[in-house]
Structure formats: C-alpha cells, structure tokens
Length: 190
Image (tube, rainbow, N blue to C red; front, side):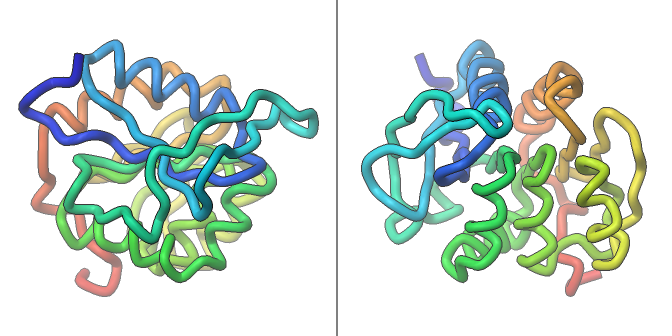
C-alpha cells in the first residue's frame, strides 16, 4: 500500500536498462511503503538486461509525454549500457530530470545513469559517483567525483555498480523520507 504522505517515485528507463538497478531500488521503495511508476520514452513495455544478456520485460506506467515531475516525489535513473544513452539524447527526458532539480526533489542515478544528468546540465559542482567508465565524463562536466559505493549531495544520490545497491537504496529511501532539499539545485543556479 502506498504511503499517503508521499507521491510515487518515478523510475526513468527505456530499453536496455540494467535490470537489477531497477528491481532493487523498486523493491526497497515499495518495502518502505512508497509507490513506484516506470516512466519511459515509449508506451508498452521495456527490455531489461543482465549486462549484455536480455532479462525480463517491464510494463511502462507513464510515458515521458504524460509525466510531470510535480506528480512524483523523486526519480531513479537505472544504468545499463543502452537506456541512459538513449535517454540522454531525449529532450523530454532531460526536461523531466531538470524539473526534479528545480522542484528541490530527490534525484538518484546508478552506474551509467549519471550520463542523463550530464546531458541535462545538472552536475556542475555536485559531489557524485558513477561506474568508472562515466567518472571522467562527470569530471569533464564539472562534477566533484568520488569513487565510493554511494555519494549523497543534498538530495542527489549516486552509486557506481550493482554491488553498491544496498547503500544506494538505503540512502534513497532515507532522502525521500526527508522530503524536499533546499540545497538541491541545478548547477546553473549555484
């Protein structure tokens, strides 16, 4: 049952997301009494992956065309080799992510997920982490990169790889329970 004090949490993904990076946060959020909704660039269902191998298909709850950050308490961006790469070139997805920052809401990304945040222009001067292959991109975009299992910077929660999911999901739930973060900002506002 969803917590009446909270709005749903958006999970922003499309074909090619790393399955465990969607299912683990979703389970932790739902175990905490929070509702989750998969938001995608297309209706129907999307393909999960176990690295390079196909996993399960997941039903999309809301398309990006119909989603508004104001309808959610937070957003989770799973990694994977393909989903973040597709979403980072989608203007509607980038606007959706920027709106969470503008509304001072929790934003989280794991593995390759921070690529979406880089393209949204919201990482400058933010403490973050990501999979090693994306850490240089974060530095080049102005982020302060740490190679640790989880980094939380005023409502922005990031992690590197599936092994980091316990720390990531614990902090994600904690940050949502805290509510809006006055210091959450787009890098342009800093």
